[in-house]
Image (cartoon, rainbow, N blue to C red):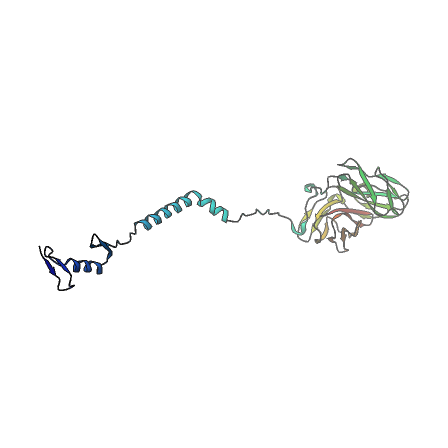
Length: 293
């Protein structure tokens, strides 16, 4: 064995090599090999490994699988949480003008039941009947016309109209319209007309056949002969016509702060409460119990 000098790099190498090992090493280094350094007097090299994409691909697949599992088991719950809850809306059907036609179908706004009208002559007394409570506080809107004691007994003082209100311990209240006439003209309840038909002084009004009709075409039937019951909302108004007679009625309100009635028959709810509208034609009269809420 002898040494041979490489004509390319000038390094001496053994003739046992077919080619110069140093040149081959430099060639490998240029192609990507990394020179490490001499070991036992000889240079060695390592090859740079290409980066692997297997790891990132596996991680991506695992993330996708986890996302699919979460959506499969929790997707519906997440969708419901993002959807705003809808509040059901109650639809209330009312007749035009807020009138509840037919007195028989009306649910009282108060738990008390009380006589709605009372007619007395000056100096006479009468008792208003009330039920639905235990103890009542009584008050008269005009003590100069009529007074009331703790038992509901009303005493007529002078001609006019007064509203008697009874309130129980629970806060429920009811009203009665008291009409005071001259001496010897006392009449109570619904008997203000002879025979209940309103026949007096030559005027004939058959109260039993009367109904009220609103401008919207709603018919209101009496709950008693000549007595009507209407529920309204504050601020509402409509025109009423008395059906079943050609007589002309003059209207008045027992409490104009609650409800009023014009000469043309327009009923208006002013404030919350109860009032009685009275219509007179000669010696005949009808009454409308108005509840404003």
